[in-house]
Image 1 (cartoon, rainbow, N blue to C red):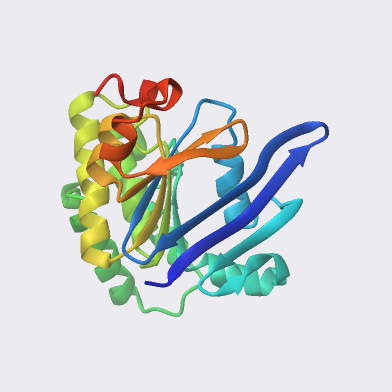
Image 2: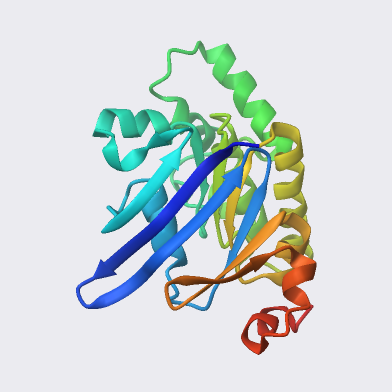
Length: 242
């Protein structure tokens, strides 16, 4: 199957600090790639390069068959519309209701209000939060805010979703619910996803493939079972809690 996301030889430095030293990866449509790595290993820089927020020093980033390093801002924005992003904090607007938060990404569309309403209701139903539509973010638990953030991501029907630490700060039960939700969305919408996480259970639930970054390079990759049974002590250390 053809890769919907492909990175080849990605390098990115900040001054003398080499963060990414030649990372390559592929994600096929309908597949979830989980990225492990210690703090500071370059995982967030990888995502920022992938969506064009940072310009790589070297390497090629191909999304939907187009090298984004060769696109102008208008072309890049068209590509970005096919990509959803779930921020670690959920990044909701505190002054807006849940409904208004979900309507926000649609503000430039030419949809009629009844069409917008239908999309909001569908997105909230997908994350099991239909009853929260008129609540304020301050009235929601951490797990509910994550769900609303995911609903807002889904409202534009993205083909690729980037998850930045989707279960961080959540209790174990809520973390499992979010991980299952990621899996449900993958199956329902056939999305390709990049999931950055430290949560081994989240990786076990969601990953088709796992990549471990060490010192700016892909140190190991494989399935959950392959990596959890790795003879390399550093790789196996990620899986000890499981």
